[in-house]
Amino acid sequence: MFANLEKLKREYSDALTVFFQAVQGSVEEFQALDPWRSNAHSLALKMFRHLSSVNTLCQMYTDIPPGRPPSHYIDFSSAQIVTRAAIETFLTFAHVFGQEDPTLSRFRCEMWQLSGLADRAKLQPASVEAEKTLAADRVQMDELRLRIAPSPHLAAYSENQAKRILAGGWSQLRSWAELAVEAGIHPRYFGQTYSHLSGFSHSSYISAMQIAQARGMPTQLEMAQACLQMLLFYTTHFVANFAKVSPSAALFISVDERAKVLLNKWHIAHATWEKLYADQDAERVKRGQA
Image (tube, rainbow, N blue to C red; front, side):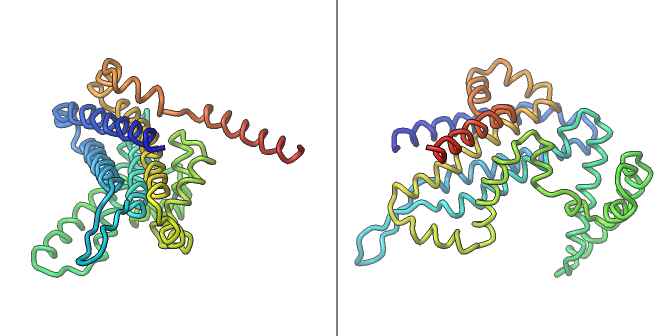
């Protein structure tokens, strides 16, 4: 198991390098595009920092309390919380920027921006500078509404949904599970993994129980390994989606050997998951009949 984990860590390190090179190589490319597209690069930066943080959290820590033996542990609980945040970052990127129709991407980007600004507008300013920021936000929100309201893409929503969008309620319209299916993630894989990660984010009883029971280092390593495996899968999907909006990223992953190896192994398609789950179900039925 330890040998497998070391191999997984090397693959994860390669994935971080591939991600960084694919994204950073597109900086000048994005600077030459419409300003709204720069948000795609910002989401990629957010994703990279989540990936890097999980890599750090999956290392072994040592506490040395005065007068007591050293205590070794892996903070897999925090790693799972950040893993969930990384997955949501990918799903947001795919939903907003992973569209073939650039007018739809821009429309969804403006909805996403309006929703974020509306959330910040609920805060109480604690300083003059904060009040100025919120005042500027209100101006930007009005400008966004003027662009969103006449968009033909708004007609795809019901009247109540359109009102919610213009009020800044973009995040309430679609569940993460729906966005995952739209992004090509198998619903069964997403449902099983995301539900587990959410338990740690929301401090469910199961999350506390697992922390209490995972006293041994082998168990903690297994929990850390699960995070790395999930994020290798989502990292390759993010890079593939990013390549759709960045010609330089697309060129990079087509010629870089590490990128090709990672995508070939970890960019698991919906059809592959479908066969895997069908085989598992068949085996489960077979065991039940035996």
